[in-house]
Length: 425
Image 1 (cartoon, helix red, strand yellow):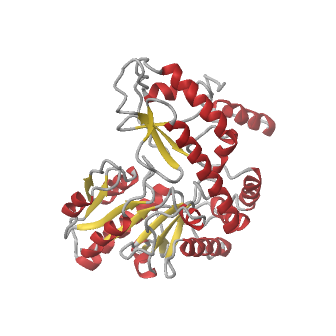
Image 2 (cartoon, rainbow, N blue to C red):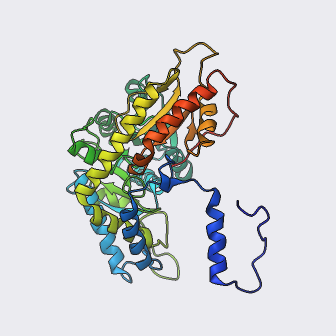
Image 3 (spheres, rainbow, N blue to C red):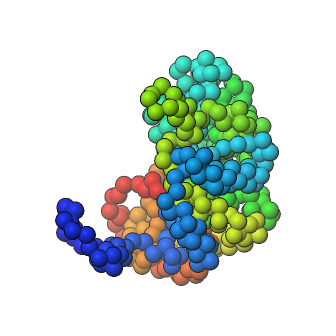
């Protein structure tokens, strides 16, 4: 257990390294057991071999700083190569971008670039961001930080963007329209062609949030599990984010943001020389950037290659299919919508009206937590969210068994303790 009374001041003298590291090891005792395949969020495991490659690359670049790629040209080439490889996967032959610390930063950069593009190209001074209620909260964060008004659109019964409502919201002040591939809450791919066409009609940017799907959907398509068009093959899509530290299986935190062209990418870059230290140029929110996650991501991409990712995605989707089947076999429980990839949410079946047999999702989550499983709570409606990865394959049979038993345990019981909905990625 974590020490309940940690020291509140820095020790006057340093401590032996073995004691310090032992304390750190002890602090981890209550953390989720992601390496056992029992966690469906936060950390996504490509296997011991992938971890080993990433850890060695991380050691090589533990101290390097990507703030100045003239001083560290290796990091400049790493960034350029990762962006080029990702652009190829997303069918953007002229796409260009940068690495960021994660999906939130990539989304913030997309919002900022869209705002500045709307001002420069269309003279928009009261910019608006149009997005479905299923879009990631980071878009709202970006609107708050950069002064955009948000116009939030409802979703249909199938959890996809209400296109009629979006058409009513898009107009002359629209700077950015958002789609997701897939969206996080229910794992549904938005109707990107229709959304992008609305943006293009008014000259606005269209960002596709593929933070969760950017390193899944291309390989799923190669194996025959295609979805509607969503990447740079869709006219009107101006930028895409894809997280390497999710299903790209790189360590935290590294993401890619790509713009359709270098011309569009320039709106993301901050270039300033109005102080006493000379010209200051940054391509994203950070100044100093650790080279560690960049190098680890480069190593993982090279180690796995297309075949390695196809193998991991295949295992991921097969595991998600088995979980969906297991959920569907439990009376009173259902998967929201019809996701076909690796994200899903399970909730109470509204057709089950009998209070004696009804399952309350958060009570089910507590029962699963007592069995050592980590599932995020979300809503509305109250549901348990899962991001399935290849690391969960080893434990899927045990999971389905425990889920069935836990459902019987809580069936007809009181509602679980009220808790904050999760906003974890």
